[in-house]
Image (cartoon, rainbow, N blue to C red):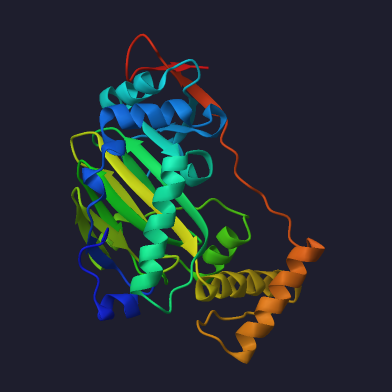
Length: 303
């Protein structure tokens, strides 16, 4: 068993609220320095996310994209150890067989332990990040589980409702009119659930719950597993349809969860709007503004 503390209560609440689990993935050799260097070497360099960021949790615009071209997998790992770097191997399960096998193993166990759970659109990402690095306040459209492998981090999870995120802001994100990162008020921490992640712990939260992350003073390795369920896909399409109606008809639709005639109608509307391309996505594409220095681990050079 990968997850050590499944219960019927957790299975029923999975994807609906913040839950903590114990796991044993941190013992696997694929997460040693050698295993991580091999994964970084084999992962397509054009897909690798290389980022740095400022220290103020409100300053999300300091999140900058860079390039790791010219560095070996071992050098990339050393850069994460020495600098203020966040390496993101998105969809590692599509490009690296050991991670494809791991994703199959994890999701098969989840579905076995929660018989009503059916998952698809699975994305297993590998996050290798520096001491004290952070991920700014943001939300994800799919469901997410975050697995801690090495190091410690704190995760703040906020309710998926106003003032933490309003319905119109959520619609903009689902319609890809705005970035997943958005303005953060430190006063909101009072309403958050703060979760301390150590190796062998996993946390998952309600769909669309905003969250932010701060690493402890050491190298961090985590797995981010994004996925959809039929219920989660329905919610995403309802949000999409609400955004279309707000823009096309002047109506002020409200978000509700669950299978209902109204939500099934919105599902059909969302599918039709996507097929007809009624809404144009405005994806925020970050240009690379720095490159990692192969001669000085952790240092960044302007492009």
